[in-house]
Image 1 (tube, helix red, strand yellow):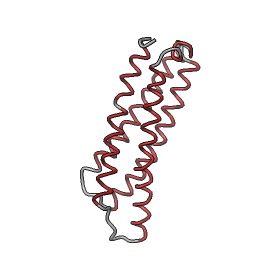
Image 2 (tube, rainbow, N blue to C red; image 1 turned 60 degrees about the vertical axis):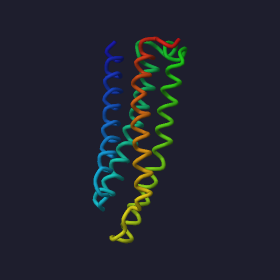
Image 3 (cartoon, rainbow, N blue to C red; image 1 turned 180 degrees about the horizontal axis):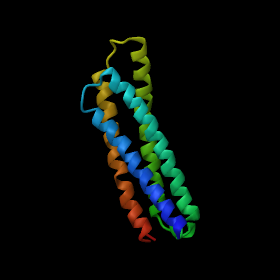
Length: 150
């Protein structure tokens, strides 16, 4: 029982951290993308990726070692929707990540370089899509944890 509680705590904490980094990226897009902001976006995105890995690892640990057991989760549709949404967010996040890397490199070669408005708008839009899709994951998790959708 203690192991299940610890795994749940670690999983929830990782989810909160992941959302924190994602929201921080969104907030940074509200202001001008100055050189320091572009560098910070790259670092935040790296931490966002790391927190996603921890969310995945702790989720798998709960599946394998948790009190309810894998069969409880794997017999319903909710876990598959949850995993699909998680993977969808991960796939959407690839483009902003690549843009952050490219922007930092361009900035290193030319200190006067600025992010084109079209690129900025596209990345911001994708970040907002990520946030909104990610916000559905806890809803599906509640359905899954209660054994609904079986």
